[in-house]
Amino acid sequence: MAFSPLVDELVESLRCLPGVGQKTAQRMAFHLLERGRSGGEQLADALARAMTGVRRCETCQNFSDTPTCTLCQNPERNTGTVCVVESPSDLLAIEQAGDYRSSYFVLMGHLSPIDGVGPSDIGIDVLLRRVREEGVTELILATNPTVEGEATAHYIADRLDGTPVLITRLAHGIPVGGELGYVDGFTLTHAFRGRKPLAD
Amino acid sequence: MAFSPLVDELVESLRCLPGVGQKTAQRMAFHLLERGRSGGEQLADALARAMTGVRRCETCQNFSDTPTCTLCQNPERNTGTVCVVESPSDLLAIEQAGDYRSSYFVLMGHLSPIDGVGPSDIGIDVLLRRVREEGVTELILATNPTVEGEATAHYIADRLDGTPVLITRLAHGIPVGGELGYVDGFTLTHAFRGRKPLAD
Image 1 (cartoon, rainbow over the protein chains, first blue to last red):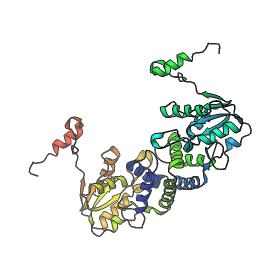
Image 2: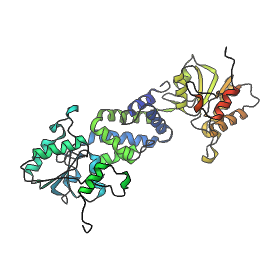
Image 3: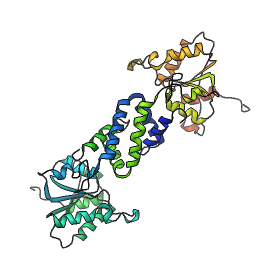
Image 4: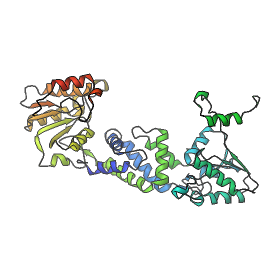
């Protein structure tokens, strides 16, 4: 950029955000400079503190400000049931639903041999140790219903074969509020096979 | 967010960026924490420096690190011709085209009585003084071809009525590489009226 090295640098740095290219970065930089200086300063501060202060929880691998995260520290949470998710945003979605009140394990990814992501890279060894040594009675494998998510779930289940722990997977079916006409065949098949008596 | 106040604060701060809502902010925060810590630190630094260091150029009103921007300081630029644009991104587009080598004036907006934006808010008085006192011979009104942009251009032209300065507006016509079938009627009319001998 011809007129200001500082603006130039800001635009270049904004491109590290996902989904932000040159034009969007420019628009963001100009917006902050024109109309959002205080927001920009606050963002700079929040970024600097988060980048240095946020670590991984020793128990569940989720992001945390402290060695053990607030969810794992909460004594009201049942540690006998562990829900395994791929990412913090999956955990957030479950927390926002508000029904599940036990503990989590965040893989921060899924098995992907083609990208060189093996079991130890996503902490599956840590999870297995926790299941075997800490009296976990149910392990809910809530990885995504994608090829990699399914493979990750099956790998974990295989490794726990013979361990006295109930291993479950989230139910497939029609989304609440969805229209049958727009639901794909696989989902409909799952919904039919998993049908329940109306009284349930 | 349940697990980390620092992440929470980062997500909230990211929402000051234009076009970034709760979900996108979350995705950005998690991306930076998982895979882009160094990029995040660099962004925090660039933001902090830009928010405090970038001011407005005293001559052209554009963003600048110094009291007068590098474009206005450049002795090779002809100051007798001034191109008036609405925003720094318009200026950048013209600079990237690479043909125009004279000076600019950046309004940082357009006249918009409904939003309470009057002539002095976008520095039209500063522009008029510059035109009258600094021997400007041509003023190119390159505001956008929108209702507000046209109104702003006409207002400036009206105020300079009687001043010995050539006032021009960018030509309308068919975009280079465009297909006639997709060009709107107004543009085609302008293109016909502005037609030129082939030898030109």
